[in-house]
Amino acid sequence: MRIDILSPLPHLLKAPFSTSILAKAIEKKIIEIHIHDLRDYTKSDKKQIDDYSYGGGGGMVLMIEPIARCINKLQSSRDYDSVIFMTPEGKKLTQNICNQLSQEKNIIILCGRYEGIDQRIRDIFINKEISIGDYVLTGGELPALVLCDCIIRLLPGSMSNSSCALSDSFQDNLLAPPIYTRPCNYHGHKVPDVLLSGNNKKISEWRDEQSYVKTKKNRPDLLEK
Image (cartoon, rainbow, N blue to C red; front, side):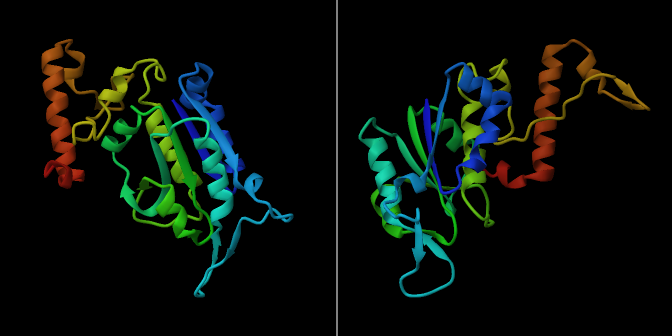
């Protein structure tokens, strides 16, 4: 898989890809990450990529031309399954969306900044708009990193134990059950006996029950699905 990320502030994106699972996935060539500075695609001597909004209003707007040049250059070299704009106005990110995106080959992610982007970019190029929640951040870089993390960990070979991703919260509209490790007794707080029993059938039943109980308590809306 290849992911191209377009941003006015590319330095915000680099550190997370240099450590942990993301770095290992890149090293194993499971994923290619290419970060593009939108200022490299402007013809302005001052590297300007934003301007005032037509009709007035506060804040600056990312201009159409630098973004269009970058996307056109990328699309001239390969086909992209998704061109995604990270925006609080988009469809809320879910595990199901991540599962679907993890099956794609090439993805472009556009990070907004300032007051937003010229609407014509959305009309011409964008085929998916994704939000990580009902709140507003200063830019799309953090949401883009969240999306990349969610996708990459699902790719075969990116995690040492690929079955871990299958038991994540939300994979079956249930939250994950409680988990424990050593010591089995911490100042009187004990690990449930069933987890020490070695009975895989009873352990599986306990985990299913606990997932349901936790979901009913914390996210009853998931059970409606």
